[in-house]
Image 1 (cartoon, rainbow, N blue to C red):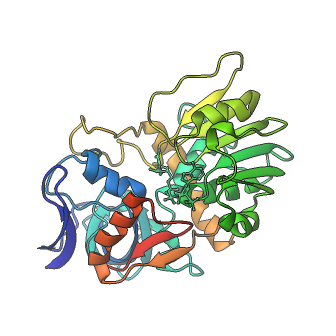
Image 2: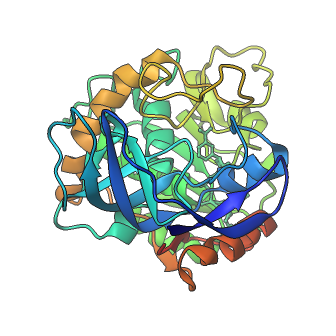
Image 3: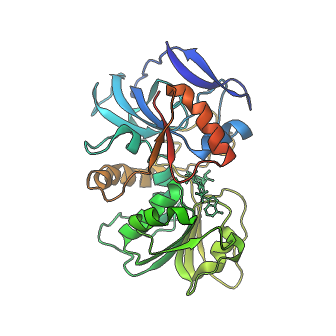
Length: 342
Ligand SMILES: NC(=O)c1ccc[n+]([C@@H]2O[C@H](COP(=O)([O-])OP(=O)(O)OC[C@H]3O[C@@H](n4cnc5c(N)ncnc54)[C@H](OP(=O)(O)O)[C@@H]3O)[C@@H](O)[C@H]2O)c1
């Protein structure tokens, strides 16, 4: 048996329960989870009953750990290897079984805590910026390392996990002006990642933010910044937003938009068990570009080209997830990714 944080029915509280350790099915690996990172989506799944296909459910997406057992037909991974993955759910427990097709190997130079910050937030930044339409704005569909957007300008709204990866990827693309709209306490760190300018979000309300001259790309990493993004982007430019809500395109400007979904695989690889799950918007194109992400991400990590989010480790093993999600829901987490050690 193992400990797990469970939601027993729609909108029920998170509770600590004892559950059987799963057995890996054909094509699956069983992973002993060392680190699981918390994302805003996890509290939203419970609070709004979205992206859940059956109850009781163990939520939690960003897992890193060790292969404990391989299921029938699994090739390329063996017991004892360090892996990480982004799951639809199953991370808030001590052991999880998932298809080997979505597992990535952890490079030697990176810890479980560090790598657990990547699986949801990194594809959210990378798919939105790099992948071709309809899932991204197509800045680097072949994943060139040769700075294909050299000299361009961008605005990133936010300073959290997704924003930190977006800033690093814009730098990787060769952008030479990267404006971050963020709290000034994050200024030094965001500049380390690649921001060239930081606009204090406590001094300038989001609705009043103006950048001059307008930028080629805006990444709205908070979800409430689409209107501002439309004001700040140049005619012919592009916007990525993390918001799935309906949007109104600007008048008088032609703008390419991605309402990004942070998946590196689509329903053809792993989807929910039912096809009517509210909020599940992955498409087969996520699998196509996801293969590129799975190929390139370990190398980006090994070479230190993209670094992990700063981490705060929660106390109390898997039970620590409950307090961490409460803090995320209250909006009282700033500049760090919360990570639990199941
Ligand atoms: N569409 C997708 O597939 C997808 C995937 C992942 C995440 N998301 C969404 O993307 C958003 C960000 O996720 P995350 O993981 O990066 O969250 P996070 O790490 O928790 O970052 C949130 C931070 O953003 C900053 N912030 C909040 N409002 C802001 C504003 N108006 N302007 C500038 N900064 C602001 C705050 O920093 P300070 O308080 O320190 O200023 C806050 O701590 C969430 O809404 C999440 O649900 C969507």
